[in-house]
Length: 133
Image 1: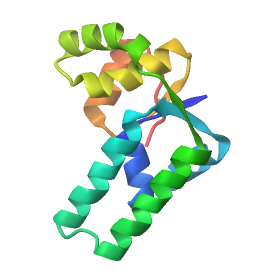
Image 2 (image 1 turned 30 degrees about the vertical axis):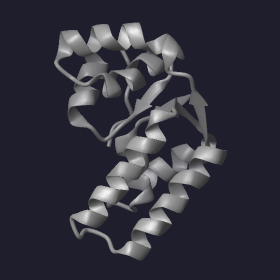
Image 3 (image 1 turned 180 degrees about the vertical axis):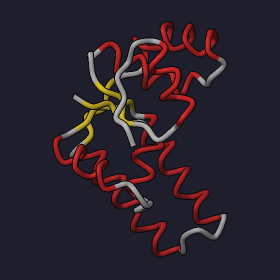
Image 4 (image 1 turned 90 degrees about the vertical axis):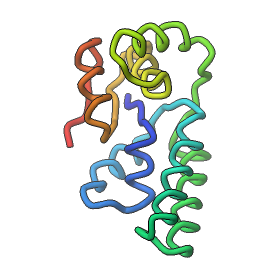
């Protein structure tokens, strides 16, 4: 089982170089928190604002995100993850947003799919397996 975070989901929806392994893992299905959709949509919006993609590409990326959220990514509630996420975030100087994904992966004995180097580093510290990129 794979827990996907926003860095990986956004990378795939934006068709970034090196995102092909993400597609393969998504085809098998993944788990995440509902925050992943909002964070990934924001990444698409920022890519458009920075001129990295045009308006049509941003609309396509948004459609991909929404389709994946409806079909390939099972959403898990965040409430029961918050206390552990807060503790890990406090101890490792990272955001609670990132640690929610780590705690979910740990709770489900799943592998974390992320492109965020700092998050991967913390995942290893707390005993969460990651997918190498």
